[in-house]
Length: 340
Image (cartoon, rainbow, N blue to C red; front, top):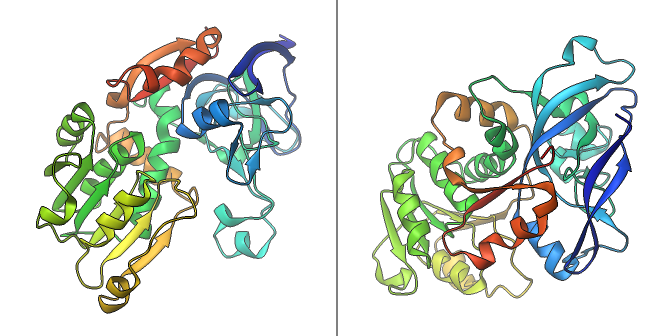
């Protein structure tokens, strides 16, 4: 096969299915047949607005970065025994030589090439090439969907690590979208004994309870400040400035706030509260060294990412997949199957 189909964002709200050459793996790379791609909020944002902050789509770009599939070819320097392996694709390949990479913080590499982040094409295509070290083998106990969704699961793992969630932690998670829901499961797997999830969507709050939340808060009915909760860790997954500020004010002394959701630059930080309680506030930017843990959590059943999938779509219906959450309040995670 010399050509493949790809879902290409050509303009705001204009996604085209195009024929493109199948890429050839270069030195140290593998070619992956893409079997499943999860739809991320960033894909939707690029589709609807053509940009996320400073990342602007200036030329046609293939969307998608949550992906899994099968290695079908290898480039020079890669063991041919990898052909036929089922893999989960870690979609950001750093330069591996800069100070951040050498310090182990490769997610902060200024030379990072991240799928579906302008100008890099993503994985919503029949095939992709990726550095062999970032195509992680997965066991057969992990479904094709789960292989793709190890990417958002890695966000949850990274958030819990940044918040130092551990045995006995009391965790508040704001936002019960896919990231909030994997963060809920990760917090439980990391040993948290109290996990409160706040959102406006009753269906997602029920799902949070099913996945391990010990309590939920309908933020439309009950302000967080009136709940009496005092978490040790906040995992802010909504990106909403008001929700973030309200949640920060619930933290106990020496609490830790991890800002996961993509917000804007206008967050009103309650400085007096932060200073007087010595609250730690940190951001997250993707993840680093999380795939082994994510694979183990999914393979062991400690985290169930398959339960988040609410719709499957062939490549030709990628636009419908991107708009599913906007059109259906019960939709959580859409998966596109590029081979269909």
